[in-house]
Image 1 (cartoon, rainbow, N blue to C red):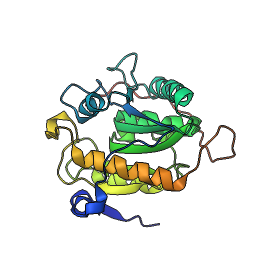
Image 2 (cartoon, rainbow, N blue to C red):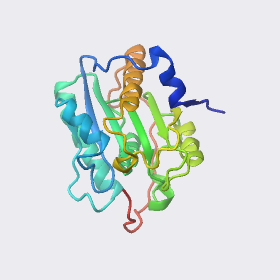
Image 3 (cartoon, rainbow, N blue to C red):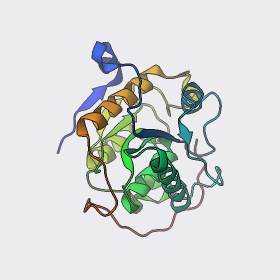
Image 4 (cartoon, rainbow, N blue to C red):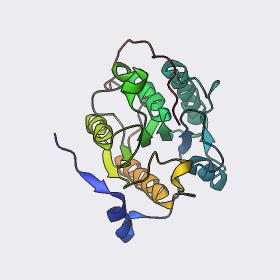
Length: 229
């Protein structure tokens, strides 16, 4: 299957591509940072300051990218979100946070309404590719990748996204799409999140545990820590 790749600039040239960001009732936004967390200049931190109702998935050790431990924290965050958001959580993930989010989707996709995947970490750099899904995810996803990301070739990111059934977005030359990219509040990313929320609204499906959805099982150990931001 060949997936279409949308240009971020082309999307934003359409006046309908950047609706006002409003989270539908019954959903909770969770941000999932990558290694070392997201500092104050990172777009994730700026979004959290702008939308104080959003919640961050915190890790016990931001310097140790352990996929099982990080996925467990994602699971805990989703469970908390479901207490106040019956329609589930919308996860906004960056870098290794994308891998932790996807690993949780392997273990149990219940409570995940949709995911925005921004500059995913390269699974092969961490030896965790067997722990990730290799089939279409049971919820809508948008994957954003840069043309000059030093940590993950865009073609590789899009290959993974095609397996997951993601909408693929070419972000242009934005590096790792992090604080060093100088994005400020990154309004283009907020527009993509708004698009994802529209997808969820049109889908109108609530994923419950044990509903027969596809899951993936794999077993492997996480490789030694690799510096990553």
